[in-house]
Image (cartoon, rainbow, N blue to C red; front, side, top):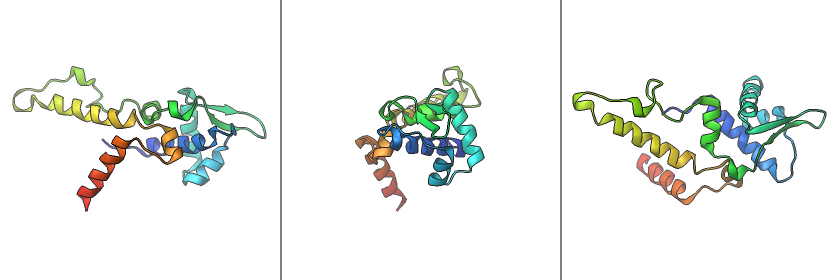
Length: 152
């Protein structure tokens, strides 16, 4: 799986909004772009998609900006990625349940199912609130540590 720049920027923007959640402040797109080093025009398009996906709301006026539409602990990273990039994992834009392979490649469908399941296990259990608080669920931390150790 490849994480697109759009998904990466969207998750980072949501983390910035999650930090502001407790104070109920709105955050200007310019401030998010600066804090996360995201091109402003690209971010504005992402924020529009997040608003259309009902993950953020925009507030007009001098003190306007963006806010999360619900508590950060209720917004999984998977929610954000699905809004801006679609399904977490698919093969050739087909549903995994529609796939079948002949001969020696027959077990490949199960491999793709396992990949999707692994992605969901992480991305549906980490919230933008977790990011903003700087704490990840234990199983995600352990998985990350295990894979970092393998790289050394």
